[in-house]
Image (tube, rainbow, N blue to C red; front, side):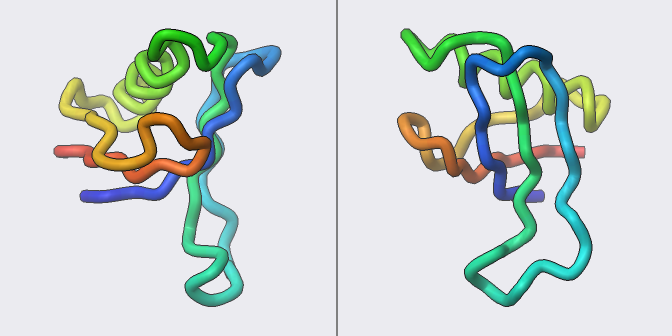
Length: 79
């Protein structure tokens, strides 16, 4: 499945927040918010995001499809 995420690098804790119900149309989409302590340098934040989502969904099959240098990303999760 593909999910939309909003990345928050340099956060005080690592966590995944699911989308809030009742998003407003296509502009809101249903974004998961992924906070990671790692900085967005050298792909460290992206690796931390993949690690956090792997734990959250209990699968090692997580990869970033789009948005490698953006805070908004599309991620593929194979359950």
